[in-house]
Length: 144
Image (cartoon, rainbow, N blue to C red):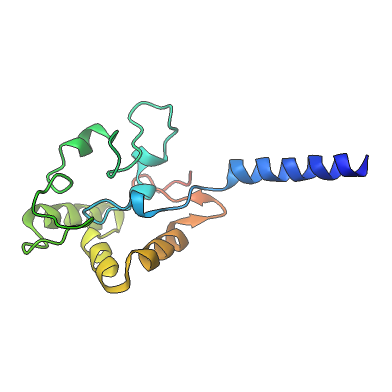
C-alpha cells in the first residue's frame, strides 16, 4: 500500500511539473535575425490556436514570417545573419522597432551569439525570460 501511495505521489509530482514547467529555449528557437522565437507571442500561444508558430527555423512558420527578407536571405552562410552587410538595412529597421517597442535588440543578440557562443546565449535567454511564473512574452509582457 505504501509503494502504491509513493508511486501515486511521484506521478502527481511529474504531472504537475509537466503542466507548470515552461518550455526551455533551444537553438532551434533562435531565428537567423537573432530573435528569440521562444519569447514571441505567436510561439507561446497554444499549439492548437490559430496563428501558432513553432519558430522561424521550422517549416510550418507563422504567415508573416514566411515572407521575411531576413529569414530568406541568400547571403547568409550560417544559421544566423553573418554576411558582409551586417547589419543590413532590414535588420536595422527590425532591431529599431523591437528595441523601441519591446526593449529587445536582435543586433545585440547576434553580437552575443558571435562573442559568447550559442550555448551561453541560450542559457542567458533562459535565465532572462523563464521563471517560476512561466515564460515571459516580449510582445504582450505576460507570462505563459
